Structure formats: structure tokens, C-alpha cells
Length: 172
Length: 172
Image 1 (cartoon, chains in turn yellow, purple):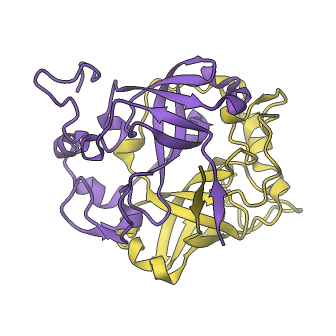
Image 2 (image 1 turned 90 degrees about the vertical axis):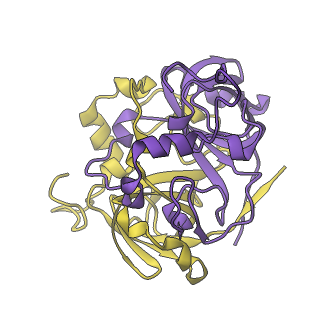
């Protein structure tokens, strides 16, 4: 059985190298990007402006071939791939919740983008507060990763050169 | 451009009819299901037991043909499809965060399942507390939907027959 999906758009970001791309929106705060939705799908963006965050579903189109055991970015211990957010997965589908800043026709201006430039977009879903809250969350091996270490590793050199990159906000 | 994905497993649930399937995990509290991962991918489940919740990525394989403007379940006003979680989307990919209760080899026992029985599974990701928190969330038209109305409509008749279904917990 096989399912075929065609992109509805493309994500434009300042991240050009996988090894320098933050691993999560949390470690990409203030990074601006544009979500270009192809004109034929623009009608589907109606009413999206009311949401502060959107869920982007996309293809990790430059992921290396998948392995079932991986060493995650935030730890040195090998883990099952389904217990990590590593991009090299059997089906290389990525999900990021980004901040929606505005819309210009078929283009969404977003922030906190951890996505490679030119990434094929499969879907956009609204982030709905009442649907997303979960209680009593345990995060497995992630709970043992110190937040300072997570931030250092998670940003992966983002802000790059001397003085820091201009597309990082003041907080990070 | 086209991307092809093959299922890594299948989701077993008590929901057999789309029109009676809760629209979100929030409206399916206590509903038990099993996530069967095909044996060839079982290695990738290592370490997942430590997480209380997992993100299931799957195909809405019984969705009707997509429209770009839809009337959402929780409202009577037509909206752009990307501002809704309706299953009939240009790429019919669904995402649900469910509670992970346990693992038996290649099978995950889960709860709060809003997924149709037999749904093809594309990916499992860990739900990581530090990655998922978002502040200052605005939820667009959803903010105008009264929670009582949302619950009534969102459950979509789940608990079915007289006395309520046995697979709903006491809270709902």
C-alpha cells in the first residue's frame, strides 16, 4: 500500500544547511520565514489570520536514509527512531508549530521557524488551544536532558557568525 | 512533484463510522485503541515507553474529496480548510496526540483515540513537554465556540447506546 502526496506550497527560511538548522521551534525563536501556498490553494487560507500559531506538516526532503535506531541531537545515547524527532524516519514527515504573524494573500509570515529553506509543504492546520493541552506529561529520556544543554545543542549553531545572526531575536 | 509514503502500521480502535468518531482526542477521553507497528519497524519503538503521550501521524483514508472551504464540525460558518482540522484536505494527513498506556512488543496500547478503526499509520513521534508549550495562543474562530457546545458536537454521539458506551471514562 502506498499513499501519494503533492506539495501545497513551499517554506522559505534562512536555514540553508541541515547541520545548522535548529531542531525545534523552541530553539528558533524569532526566526522569520514565509509559507508560500500555491495559488490554487489560496482559498483554503481563509480565516487563518485569527490563529496565533499554525501546525506545518512538511517533507524532510533532505533527510538521510532512515535508520530505526538513531543518536538524537540532544543526547549521546542511541534511541528508537519513534522515540525521537530525528528527520531520518521511515516516512520522513515533519511537524512544526510556528507563530503566525500575518498573511499576505497566499503567503503566511511566520516566526520560530526550524525548517530548511525550500521545504515542500503538505498541510497547514490551525493550532487550537483547547485541543492541544495535555496533563501529566512525561517525556521519557528527554526529561533527563538538562534545559541548558538542550538549548545549546538544539540551536545547532544558529546565530552562526561573530555577533550573532540578525534573524535571531534578543531573547536567545 | 509527488512524495510516496507507505504505512508503518495500522491503528485499531472502536470507531467504525466516520460520522460517529470524536473529532479530537479531547472528546475521546478514555477510548482505548491499539497501535500495531509492523514487525519490520519494531526496533524503532525502543525507549518509547518513557513517554506519556505520542503523536500519531496517519492517513484519513476514508475522507471525502477535499474542498478548500468547509463547514467545520464545531461551527455553522464556512471556513478555509487550513483554518480547520477537517479530514477532507488536499493532503489528507491526520495528527492526533494520544495517551500511551503501555507497549507489548510491536503494539502500543493507547487512550483518548479519535481515529477510525483500520487507519493506516505513517509515523509516531514522542510528545515532548518542552517542545510543545506555546504562550499567548489565540485560536481564531474556535475562541468563539462555547466549550459545552464544542464537547457536544465534538463527541459526535460517541458513547452511543443507552447507558453510554463502556469505553468512555467516567468524566465525559
